[in-house]
Image 1 (tube, one colour):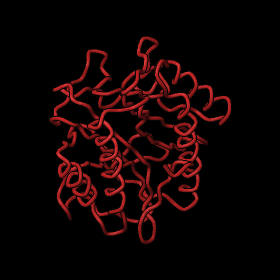
Image 2: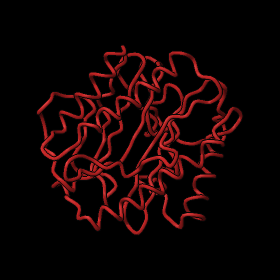
Image 3: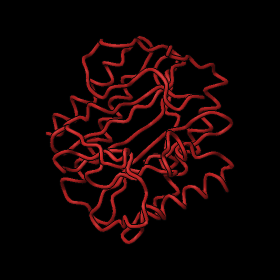
Image 4: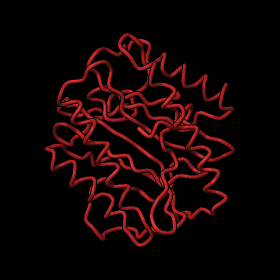
Length: 255
């Protein structure tokens, strides 16, 4: 699949979708607290996207996925399925991942939430993963490579004693949910695809407190750390601009 380069008008469409996705994550902040189920968070998000935003939750039915959100708690790396029996408790960390379709264009973003008071390790993992994502995004500009992004992420995460998940990565996005290129969160400077203005893709590092190895649960979706260590992830959709990047899913509070 060739990498699609978007026009300014198309990027404006993605900007709208990205803004809506970011708004969902912001709206959920007061609801992520001890005693709430991930199913309830999913219901709130679905009703907001469909009822308030007049948009489409991209995950519902995508390759059979049943819910609006991916809710990945503690040792779940990604693609956790909301469930009425999964009740958040004090000290949990949870990644919530949402994609909104507006007028045919996708906005994809995720962020970490701390439920109550996290452990020192959990908070350090969450903060390190955010910084790793931002350092990766800071490499985005015409002429840079995907390897530059991955190297910046890997270097920061491993310097803090954490590990980078290899099996899952960022991706191109636009009218298609997942398209080329694949955006690895590790790599060598100067390696891989060279970026050009108008490319749009996600940067979404998954960082583990322990080893990088993963395990897929029997539900066919939920991915967990093989050693049961904590995992964290943050994600933005970005566009390559004339001389750098634009985050299309910037959080309203600039968190």
